[in-house]
Length: 397
Image 1 (tube, helix red, strand yellow):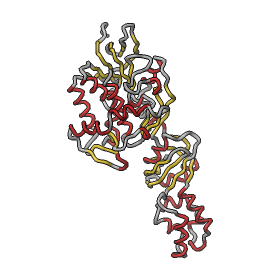
Image 2 (cartoon, rainbow, N blue to C red; image 1 turned 180 degrees about the vertical axis):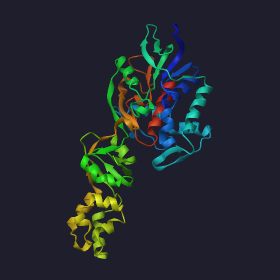
Image 3 (tube, rainbow, N blue to C red; image 1 turned 135 degrees about the vertical axis):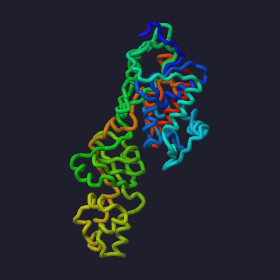
Image 4 (cartoon, helix red, strand yellow; image 1 turned 90 degrees about the vertical axis):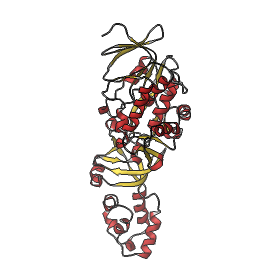
């Protein structure tokens, strides 16, 4: 261990999306920047995101797409470094991309294109990235510099940026370090939980619905506070798919969710019409025009589904419509951080400047990206928060 610490202007903890963006911007301003990370490769989450294609931003970014105890906090960063700004960089590097549903933008080839772009920019501005480095302690010195002790060398910096991410996907080496640093300096940290994550079901529901594993249906999924319309996916463990991941960030344990499997029709009215036109048709055969047979078998009582339409009452039609268009189910739990795409909660926004991401109480200490209590929807919003918050801090560190 060397006695005299390595001096730098800016030290960033975390070679993450936000950390690399901040490093690039600070480097552009001529600041000497070192990025430390305990992992063996930079940008691990970038590489695995979007099925390896990286859903790097979204055409339709607004503050409404984020969850925070301070819903206004993200507005400043998102308006000063927008999705169009990031797209300009992507276009400068001639990275081919495409739009999927709801404005989501993905690389045509590989997430490596985005990571290589960021690493090229870091190189251009002489950013040093040191991996496989464990931080053992840090403190603020009397000269207002920070001292960082690691398992190999000591560092001293004027500006310390925490870009450590959340607790999601521990196999990607997620740790609570960022929250601990905030707490060490007396800053408030909101309790964390898994977001954008699949549900497990109660034992009896799991048994009933596991035969549907692999079936995906476009649905509207709602709770008391919000609705999402996208696919749901039945799995052998429970429920997943984009609509489920979205609602999971707004779900409270013990709460039920409502699922409309046929959001575009008035099923009860259509059944009445079908009864006139095809009185002999079995209910299940009529419903099979709209939903997979296995779903009908699981959700509609056999005593009804085997009957001819002419033998069913309007009240029974309403009951069947209710079952399929207002299917209410109480998840048992989520799959937790192991598969969650993001972490809800984190460093309290009220302790940070929305302009610079700097701590209001500890000058020179900055928090960016997922470690902050700002969580985006599924669809590129979390990456945009990383780019925007990293860019903002990079103008000041």
